[in-house]
Amino acid sequence: MLRSLLLWRITRGTYLTVFLLAFILLMIQIFRIGFIIFGLPLSSSVPFFLTWFAYYGFFFIPDGVLVSTALTLSDFKEKKLLNVLYSFQMSPAKVLLFFSIPVLFFFLLSLGMSFFLFEENVSFARRGLLIQYKDKILENIPEKVFLSTGDIVVYASRKKEGELKNVFLKYRNVQVVAGRARYEGRGRFLFERGSLLTREGGKYFLMEFGRYWLDTEEFLSAEIREKRVRKERIINLANVMSIPVLFLFSFFGVLKLCRTHVQVYYLIALGFVLHQLFLFGLKVSL
Image (cartoon, rainbow, N blue to C red; front, top):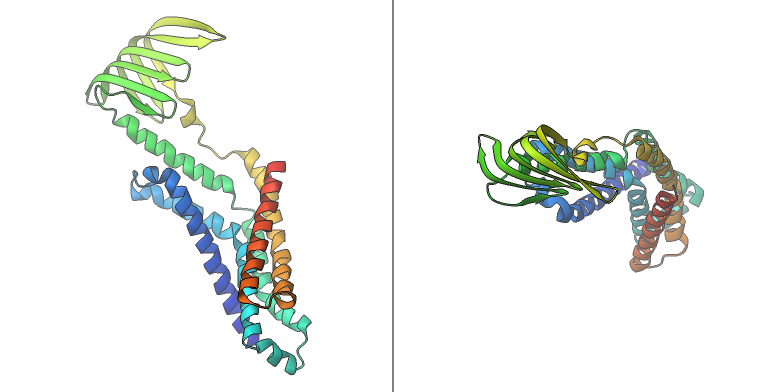
């Protein structure tokens, strides 16, 4: 019965902590890109949310184990349940063993997920949203308005059936003036009858063209970056290995050092900060 109780409480506490932290981080992210998320159809934003909660639901598992172990053991101490267990000749080592059973489940679960879930998946989904949002903006370029999005500034005097008339476009060190243009999607423009001004090595070059295609580089960069994934495999492994460390830290910290609820909360905050600092330092050093 004790094993079932601990399995339920630590599992519930870990998942609640994990999704609370993931949700708080998502709210911070929405302050940055909320205009993109809510400016696109639900079919575009739902995959981003699923990717977000899948990754951070894995990333915060060590912190969830830290919180659930500390609060569960603290509750046992407050209600004198540990004294009852000791009175039945149960040693502290056996209590530790019972607590470690659900932690072992989370360790194995995280180890398996570490080979499939990476922060790069979230970055890729976010870049995909940005591309779709810019695509939507460029497909609906207004007349007689300078439209700026990212590195692109575009102006058209008239628009008819998706075709732009008397167009000016600036992209990084390229400026194009054309009689007609059409946006073909995915950051690609087709210009007809115009001139192109570029700057290379401190010099300006001007040429005329009958037809010219411009592919904006930022739209072509939406792909999984394998170099980032290789680094994140190391971070994932370090994150998984921190589960037993944080478990022992919270278990013995609450058992030996904490006398009040405030001290338990201080212990949890300390463990969380140290864990995140460790991952941040590792990420910077790679």
